[in-house]
Length: 317
Image 1 (cartoon, rainbow, N blue to C red):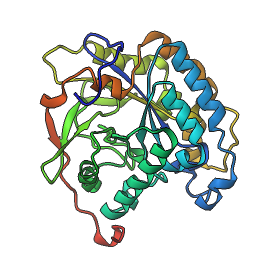
Image 2 (image 1 turned 90 degrees about the vertical axis):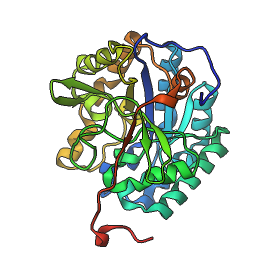
Image 3 (image 1 turned 90 degrees about the horizontal axis):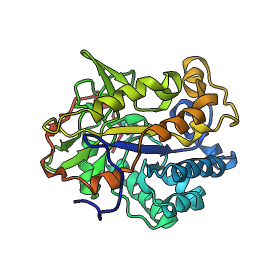
Image 4 (image 1 turned 45 degrees about the vertical axis):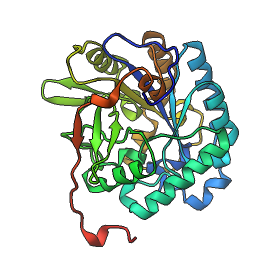
């Protein structure tokens, strides 16, 4: 067992794992070209109010969640992170400055993680053991990152999207829970985001823009598939992910263009109502609470392997 046992609610043949990637609206990948990082400390973050609303909803529905927090968020808004922890939620790591793994290398990634964990611990006193890469950027070209995570003592990851969409995802990755084998022979628990299997097609229904764009019943079809798994199937859990900024419809609109603007703002006005309905219908828990109730020693194993990239495009060490 990774964690101390505590009282939680678990569906008989599956679990609903609730998570939030905690960056503020101007730190998202879509804003990278329009909001310089030098401006981050001068813009209103709006995290206090929207996080307060989220914590009230979780408390009202007896749900726990994992908050994957940026180190820069923990530095600027430590009381927000402290409030999450004091409410009984798990604090995990989303990196320090929301840099995709493709822009880092083993040395800079190590520094990024160490800086983020220090900031998170200083804010709330929790020792961080879980990680999610910005924009799910752990794939075959960044497989080296799994070795860095195990070297630094991380126990689980939730960064591999078992689909292929644009710049992220691994189409043939397992949709069930597994132990991710690293090149050094170590392993890391991997909890992939939820998909809905329709014949041979995997529909991404775990959250984010898909949650705001698609009707709620599509996510619930994926949840129902997990809940109906047989006991002798590979272990399954429905990993859902959201972002606090998605529930803040009054946030300032950034000068985004085309699909970036559509993906960022689609469905935002109805996101709070949809989340409330979801919490009423499905019991949710944090990854920490779930892992305290299962034995992950015999989870099936899987390896990313490593896809070579153009050395001219690899960040310098």
